[in-house]
Length: 93
Image (cartoon, rainbow, N blue to C red; front, side):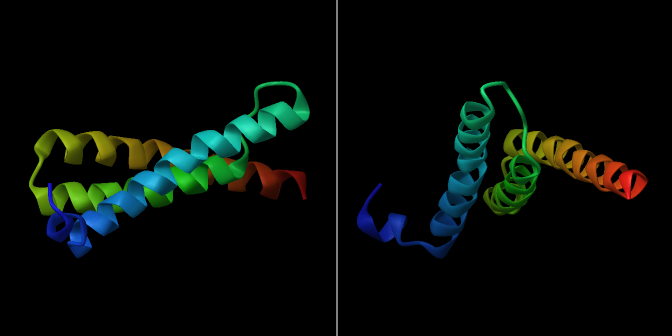
């Protein structure tokens, strides 16, 4: 891969998605360390959804069926968790 390939807007877009997707683990780790127990903060699911969506779009562009299906399935899980969190907050109010 040369510099021209790295500066391709689609490659930059895909890398942005990968960074967002990877940051979710750092966020989860920091929160778990702060609380001294394993927790999954809401921001984990937002970073999962945002990064996964970018990677899903990138996978479609690349026409990679394995990558597309893998990210697509994950998007359902991330969105569902955010819906459950929102519903739980509504019940508490």
